[in-house]
Length: 77
Image (cartoon, rainbow, N blue to C red; front, side, top):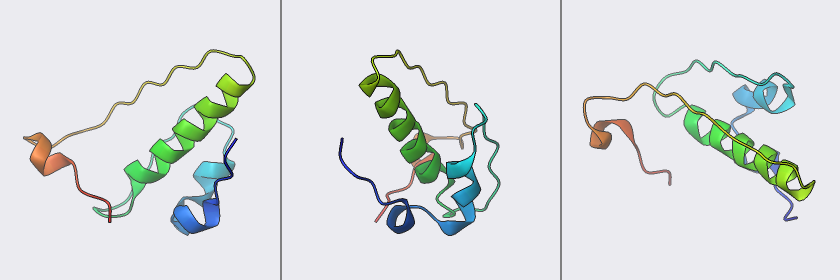
């Protein structure tokens, strides 16, 4: 499995999300706080770990969106 450096890739304000063992997260923050980026990285990491153990994994994401996808999704530089 490829090594992922959390310190380099995750906003320090969301460190508690990475350490949390609960099966749900409610994140607050303004635009460009990288909420979506942080949670998707965690979900992918958690799923990869489960699959590597031979377990099945499912993810359900509910996200409030703007009027159009163009107003809801932003490019990460």
